[in-house]
Amino acid sequence: MPSPANPPSGCVFHPRCPRMQTDPCTIEMPPLRVVGGAGDDHMVACHFPTLYAPAGEAPASV
Image (cartoon, rainbow, N blue to C red):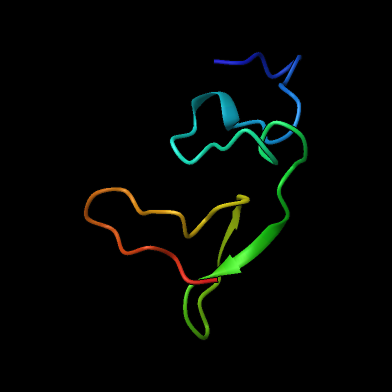
């Protein structure tokens, strides 16, 4: 796990994220965005929030 005092470049979760892609995850921090249906206030900071969902969850809609 990366040190909070010395985070990796790009998305700070990319070293341990199953959605991680080489670009842009290792280069730029993803924007914070709302996912889900109308009235949903769930927010994510991921370049690929709809790539796939963990077992038992539906993929997020952006």
